[in-house]
Amino acid sequence: MGKIRNLFRRIGSGSFKRMFHCIDLVHKETGKNKLLIFIDMCICILFYNVGYLDYHIFGFGQRNKQERKTYLTYNHNTALFKMVDDPEVSYLLKDKLAFNNKYKKYIGRDFFDPSVSSLIEFKDFLKNKQKLFIKPATSFGGLGEYKAITVDENTDVEALYNHLKQNKVFVEDLIVQHPKMSTLSSKSINTVRIVTLVVDNKAHFMYSILRMGIGDMSVDNSSSGGINTCLDENGCIIKACFSDKTGLYYTNHPTSGMYLVGFEVPMYKEVIDLCLKAAEEEPRLGYVGWDVAITPDGPIIVEANDLPGYDMPQNHGTSNKTVGMLPDFERILGRKIKV
Image 1 (cartoon, rainbow, N blue to C red):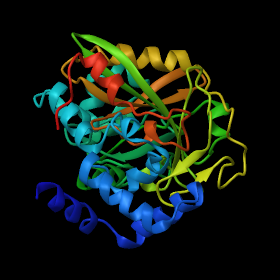
Image 2: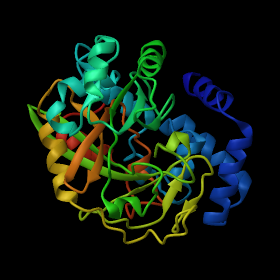
Image 3: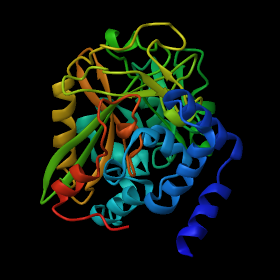
């Protein structure tokens, strides 16, 4: 009865329109009968706890029973976080200002916290500043106020300070990204998501994802409309890029038309090394997704995330793998992830 309730809960909590859109996409990719796809989706909800969105992304229409068992699901992801992340320090992954203070030597930029600093201190901070970036202290998925601003002699400094304080946002130096990264999207900082797992105080690299904005977006988050794809061991795009918003795959950038397959992230080894070092700063944060920007002078960490997206590295359209990541995580952990 529990599996049946879960089936109706998963279907009922979603959108039938999007579910049938997923069925259409799987039908186009596999040629399978839509009714059979629907039935198989329900079976996967019952026995693998995989909803219709993951069914499409994981390529379950093309996976056998043994292959399906290897996929890291939402429940695995949540259980893993609870296993290795200490609640006493997990606030660092939710509070961007606390994070910036803890990881100052990795973020490569100056910032100002209006909640603990005065207007006089703000005026002092602004000396020799021209380009800044506003962001919320607590936010996820690119939601909230994210925008670049210019500071000059016409800036009403007191009004800006009050805006920051009242809206619980802060400012930091504007990141200038590497020219090669700007070719992906010039409007947003296009980041590499590196996921690490710390076991016995040693950080392990698990996977990497390249994210980029589209249109006039100032952020590259998938949940805000950006696209993402898997990278190989050399930091190269190996297949198409995926949009959560449309459910479609793109070999060319939707805005610029730039051909994306084969693009190589500059300083990729340095990106991984930076995150491994940062991960060992606080081993009690065992499972972290680090968002890294590449500047002309090297990689810097933009922010870090709890519950990194389990779906992105297992996307059949962006990765060459035909199995999931669950065995990789359990091998490093040395134990099963129980859900």
